[in-house]
Image (tube, rainbow, N blue to C red; front, side, top):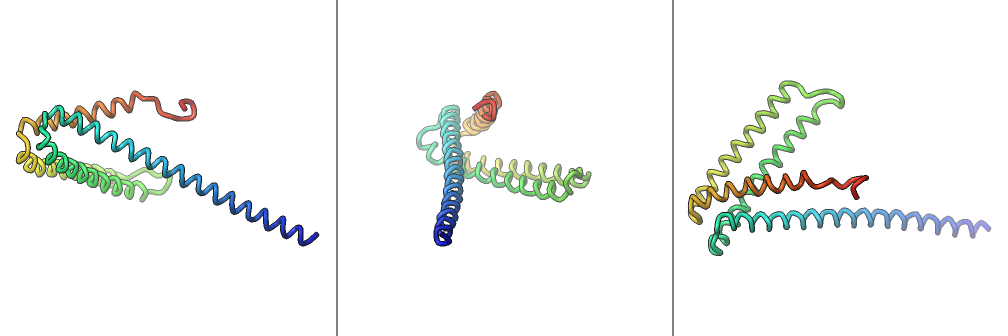
Length: 170
């Protein structure tokens, strides 16, 4: 009888371990699928953006081959600047105790960091205009700037009008 109980105990422990493993594995798979979907959505976004802006700029295939790697480089640098800003802002917000409000000094720092980031982005734009002008005309650079703003505005407006998935909208 005692031997039977130890066998049952052994089986139950292993079932628990197997269940924990399966649960962990399913969470990992779910997270991987979510990451794959995000990556796929981002690639789709980039392709639509490239197609739209290329058309608006009337880029030749040769111009496109040299323009887009530079443009992607610029976007990556801007993304990095904004990522650094978000990290700095997160640190400021986390300094305060739960339930307390930010101080005026905190807000001064936030405003200053945001302005500094905008200045750095503008400096990057000027730097890349110098690079772009060796590939495309100033008219095309202007069309790029307009198309970039229009595409972003249209993209975000579409996102606002789409219902969010939640408990009620599955």
